[in-house]
Length: 233
Ligand SMILES: [Zn+2]
Image (tube, rainbow, N blue to C red; front, top):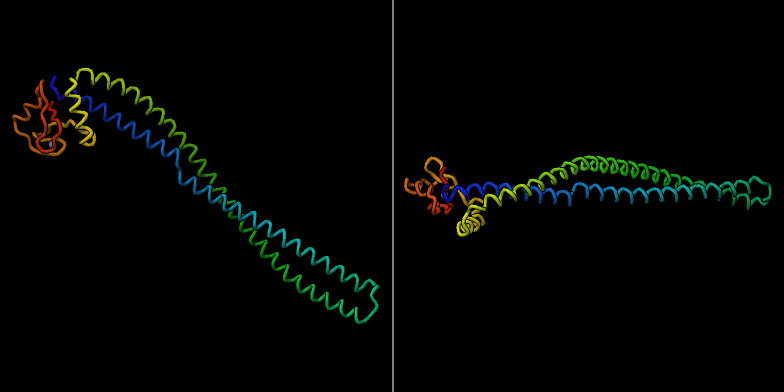
């Protein structure tokens, strides 16, 4: 077996380990932080607070109208009840009733406005609820899928750890060290294939003797351009 074949196999396992780890990391982040859900929850809270305010404002406006109607009824019964006989007092009472009724009209307008606002707030609350429900339902199944994937990748990682152990076993310590260092420097690709007399990673053409050396059983051969370990099958 050439010195680079063992490393080439090891790298295949290591790249699968990198992939599984990055998948697990991305799943973990998605599960932890879902901005769409956070946004919908915030909108829901705002809609609830607005709805609460609008309902209270409507209650107050209704109470004001009711109190004003009672005042008018009382004035009416004084006017027509026969207890007040004095013409001046009767005239004053009539004036009072006119002004009370005028103010009632204003209060009724306010009540109507409060009613419209309350209905709008109710509509906003309903649509915030519907939006939140649909996001939660969708995320429920998405999260379920992510959790399934999470356990698939975790099992895969355990299998890969065994495979890695087997792949590392026949490799000499100093060669393994060279591989590990290079892999860190070259973003995960320390060993590269020779394809059509060229380096598969950087495309540089390789001399016949370099290609021959890449099959050596004793020592590693490096691409003179990108510095990666050459592997020729
Ligand atoms: Zn190269």
